[in-house]
Amino acid sequence: MDSVAVSLLCLVRPKAARIFVGVFFIIMAVGVNAALSIAAPEQFVKLGTDSPLTPLYRWFFENVVAPTPQLIGILAAAGESALGLLILSGGRRARLGLLGAIIFLIFITPLGIWTLPNPVLASGLAWLLTKEHPRNLLSVFRSPRPRTATEGTLT
Image 1: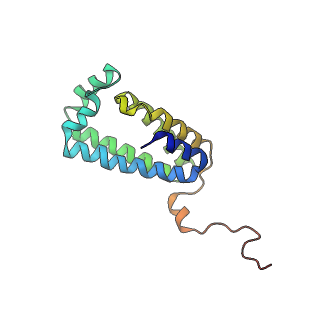
Image 2: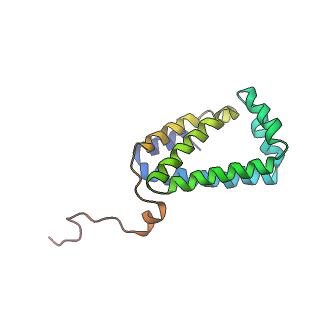
Image 3: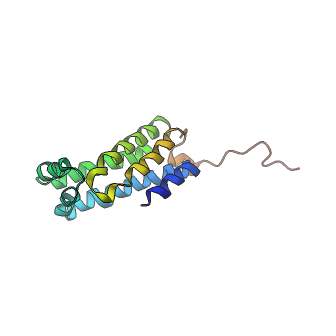
């Protein structure tokens, strides 16, 4: 994912960006954390041992993740899915999901050079925190767009 493009989407189209990010978190939870930890647990461990930016991450993956990569991967997928669902919710839940996603992105940034763009995406999500998100994803697609006073009148 191009973090700069998504951050720009957050600035220009916050509603669309929130939907995109929520769905993206769910897809990544299932497609990376869950699938990788079950299908290729050794690869899941390598995410944190190949080239972490800090020794703490290598230690964590070697000593905590390596003994039970499936469990850790499923827990990570559950957390990431929950964040995605919260982001797709409305109101305070969406804000909580966005805040959690920011923390998650910053937390995984030291995994390697491939995660260095995460703070850029986190800044886009921080911008979304300044916006109101009164509607959840289902209500966005279910209910029609509110009409203005001039729409629907014959002139």
